[in-house]
Length: 76
Image (cartoon, rainbow, N blue to C red; front, side, top):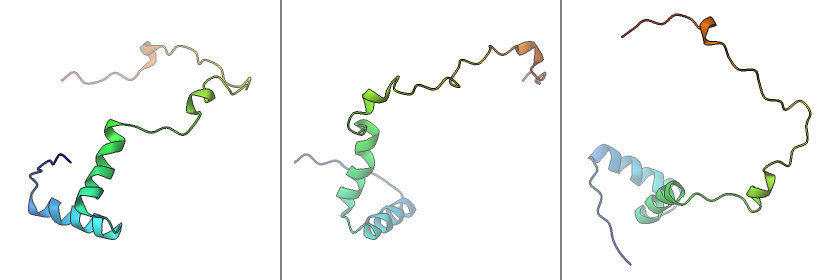
């Protein structure tokens, strides 16, 4: 299995070790569990089927906002 090296400061390492210990996981397993959802998001089964499935007459497109009514902002 490929390996990866991470360089972290002592404070971060202690936090990672503590988090892994709380979940009864090795450091490698804990780090992988943190990384995977960021690079390979998992959606519930049939998630795509929800699109357009709500039939509610109160769901309407709001009117366009008039920006002239916006508060004047300081120019930086």
